[in-house]
Length: 351
Image (cartoon, rainbow, N blue to C red; front, side, top):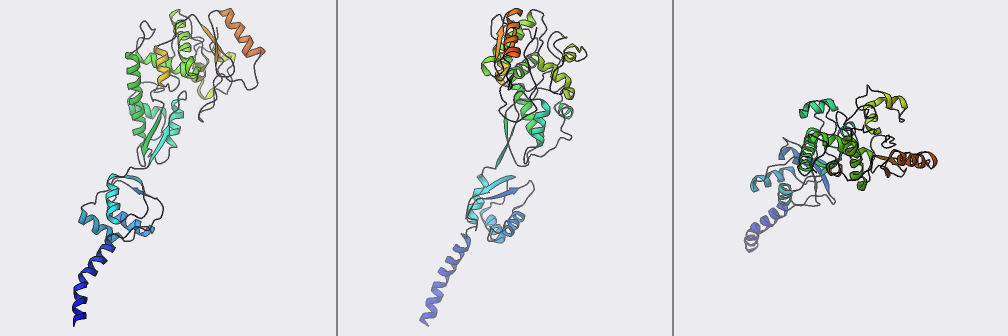
């Protein structure tokens, strides 16, 4: 009788111990396990999936724990679950866990089509603008005319399932903010009447050099040419206007073609739109150009340039770096930092 009474006395303790053991039963994953929660997913459905995946001991137990603890809300995203969390620990962790993020880079000096190609191929980014073309993006953003240059080049971070349109909107808003801020701090007496013209100039500067220290010098050359009524005569604008007709080499006929509205060898003033994505350094250079007397520049072949004040000096530099000492690996700009569209040859501003 005493043994029975003793057993009865210890039964609550045993039940309590068993309940505690079940309540704190850990998950079986020894490493991080990635889960994905989509909008509309329920804890019931996800718990069943996690149990079927083999790392959650009991979907029913997790549902009971969630109801008792009032922790049934899920946030959309991808998460890396730490090893061997108990049910209560998992539910608490899900409330504050940081979602796995992805990145897409829009590169300075590349065109809008290149930026959209990066967005189109970005992992886990939902493509909600179809087809993802400059024309469609222009309509989406409400831009009249060519939307080239209106996305700010940077690395954008997003979570799984984010919309491509959200990245595009963010890049567009950032460019507007950066342009307005740079414009508000501009030098006096610049030959631009609108911020957009400064953006056009910045895009040309971006294409002409990737050497940060040269950007204000390049901008200074172009600003002086505009003030003097000289044509800009810059290769990248011609190449942009040729579009898919550009095969890799600029020909004399290209420079003589007045029908190309981006041909700054035949048309005065700025081209009708930006020709690439311009970063903040290029914007600042366009709005704070170096003072000086240089009106010409030519690429040395290593990515840097020689600046000249007179046509005679410029011709000597052209002969030295593009004819006499031209190297097999001659480059008008530095090696790109990341893969993008094929590099366009650029001989620099010509007379």
